[in-house]
Image 1 (cartoon, rainbow, N blue to C red):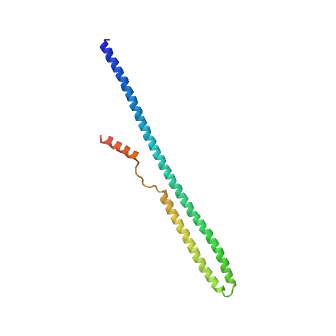
Image 2 (cartoon, one colour; image 1 turned 90 degrees about the horizontal axis):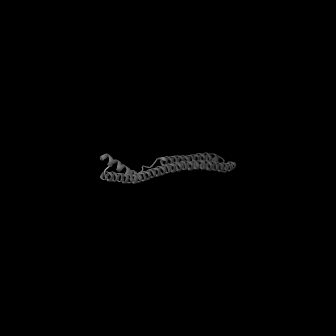
Length: 159
């Protein structure tokens, strides 16, 4: 083998080694970039899921508050009824107020039942509407990462 051929082969080998090293470093950089993108996407998904779960929890808490208001108003209505029974019962004991007491009691009971019922219905309706609106995901803008990925994809398609 001639010395010129040996020098040429050595140079080619050295060039191949240098090219391999350059490619290894580029692959490492590309892998790090891909790993960073994957971590960012994972973080976005996790953040999105956490927000969704927070909305569901808030909606359920709203329903619980509405249920609590309903139960509280039932308790107040019962207490009100007991107090009115006692008050109108005392009025029925006196001959001067006996006739008036029965009509007033019936009117009072109808009005109070209507008011408490309306209050519970409004509370229930508002609670359900708020809960449903909280469960619905808000339209969101794509993140910077998603925008960059879309731009890259469009650039590749246009080439």
